[in-house]
Structures are given as C-alpha cells and as structure tokens.
Image 1: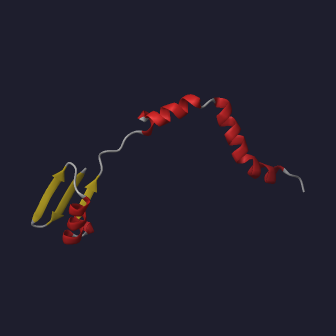
Image 2: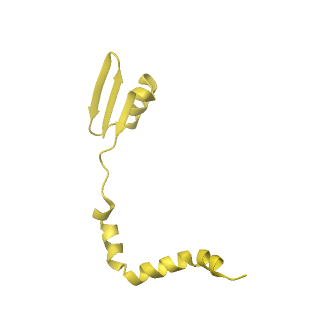
Image 3: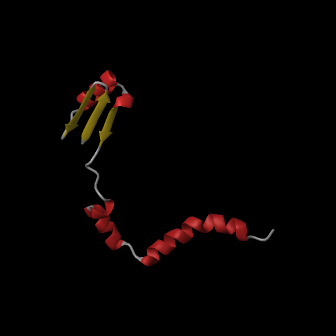
Length: 82
C-alpha cells in the first residue's frame, strides 16, 4: 500500500502496511483532494487456486449450455411470429 500526501508546503509518502486510523486521520487533516491511496496487493484472478480449480472443471459444453439458457428468454420473444 502507498499513501501520498501533497499539500504545499507539505509532501510525504508512506509505504508498507498502513493502519486505517492513520489513513482516516490523513484524509481528515489534509482533505481528500490532497491524499492518494494506492493498493498494490491486487492479484490476478487467473493465478488464484480457486479459479484454477473451477477452470479445470469447466468444459466447452457447459459454457454453451449456460449461454443458451441465459439467452433463451430473449431469443424466444424475438423469434415468435405473432
């Protein structure tokens, strides 16, 4: 996590694990326009174990079945002759 505060003549950066209380105090003291918080602990979903397990269970047939069932109510309304 990275917090940057810019308010002339003050500018400082805090790196690492930052307590929520400190972040709230920075927003209160310096204003939301002068404080920027960046979260660098994001992880790609495709690298997570649960995604790999679910992707291994998936098949093209299951994907087509899901798509056809999801589109069925919409296609049936437009394809009917009245």
